[in-house]
Length: 250
Image 1 (cartoon, rainbow, N blue to C red):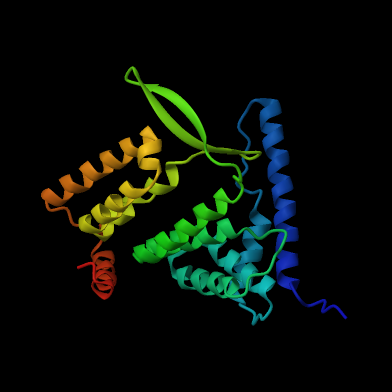
Image 2: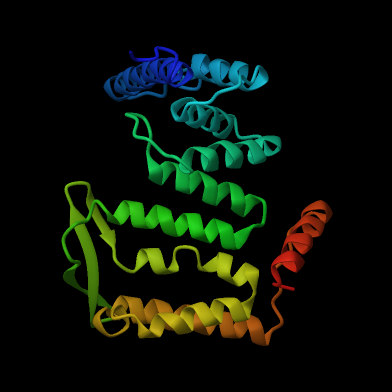
C-alpha cells in the first residue's frame, strides 16, 4: 500500500510554486500586451511565505522527495546563514537520488557549486559545476558540429553542440570557471590549462585554442605580477585563509 506521507512537503511546496509560476506568466503576458511595466515582485509572495515557514519550523523528514524540498526551500531563501543547510539537504538527497517531476540534477549541482563557491571551497565547487555541465551535455546526444566564423578577417573553426533545446559552445564548459582556478592559485590554473593542450579540441577547434592561449597568458601574467586572491572583507579573508591552508593552496 502506498504511503501517502511520502513527498507530502514536496508535493505541497511545488503545488504552491506552480500556482506562483502561473501568476508570474499571467503578469508577464499582461505586461507584453499593455507594453508597460507591471509590478511582478509579489507573484511569489505565497511561495516565499511557505519556504520561510518551512525552514522556521524545520520538520524531521526521511523520504528523499521531502529532503530535496527542504534543500530547495533553504536555497530559495538564500541568506548566508543557510548555506550549510543547502549543502546538507542537497547532498543528502544526492546520496540516494530518486526522480521527481520538479527535480533537476543540473539545478542541484549548480546550487551546490554556487554555495561551496561562496564558502570559498573552490575545489568542491568546481566538482559540482563540472557535474552540472555534464548533466547539460547529456541533452546533446549528437557529436559537436562544425561552424566557421570570421574574427578580425580570419576564418575561425568553432565546434558546438545542438539539440532540441538549442545550441551550446563546445568550448564553454572548459573555461567557464577559470577564475576559480586562479583564485585557488596561479600554478593551479596553469596546470589545469596545460592539461587541456592534450584535449582533441586543441587541434580541432580554433576557438578552443585561442581561449586556452588567452587564459594561459593571463595566468602567467598574474603569476609574474604576484597575484594572490584576497576576499574583500576581513572576515572573509580569515575564512578563505583557513580553507586555503586546509586544502594546501597556501
